[in-house]
Length: 267
Image 1 (spheres, rainbow, N blue to C red):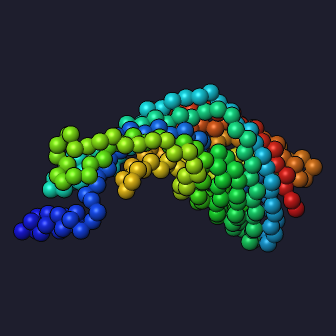
Image 2: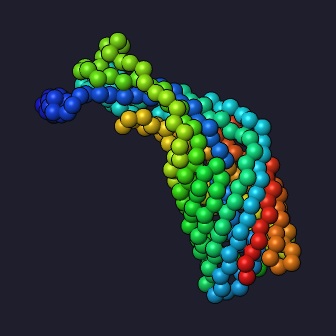
Image 3: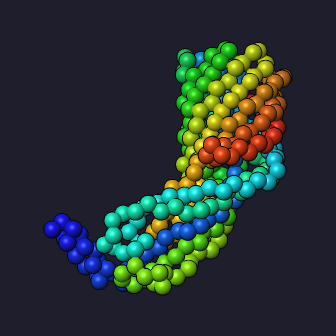
């Protein structure tokens, strides 16, 4: 009885709407980038004080193509009367190349804990909020923000505008490339060992590219970038750093890049 009611409702909605258009994604291609790097103060900040940091960096690596897949659930594969089934879409992540990055961050410390805000550019604009603690020899924290990546996402799929969609001939090809700012959530954590003016820092940042067409979207593999950086602060305000960025996509892919940066701390 419930199944008959469900089918009747679906049919009624289709009749009321301008059409029963169904879409599904079959493949995609993303010009991806490393997840943005977010760090702590990378030095000791006195309690009940604040500071600003302006920094720039250069990252470079060879181009690499990664074969991935995205998944989603819908009713459009056979007909509205079929149970929900799982479908996958084959995709490509293309990583690598060289980029100049810049960021501006603000930190505020209580007696022990520290929080901060930041905005930067890394293949697009990103902004974030961070929360952690800061001591003379060690600091750590977590962060979350939005990454407005300027990139090209190509999606290929199929569309059916008749009912039912069970016949293969009812589906027609759709898709195309979209070069624009694509907003996505990113998050991660950081930790730094501080030895006087030297520091050794680690951070991991993660996001998933948005792949969608019409009302259909995919759950895509996350891009997780691990940054291991060593640096030195001199003349109180200036710091230089260098290290490696390792990007993981599933257990199957690792992409390495070199990164160098310079920063100025306002105190």
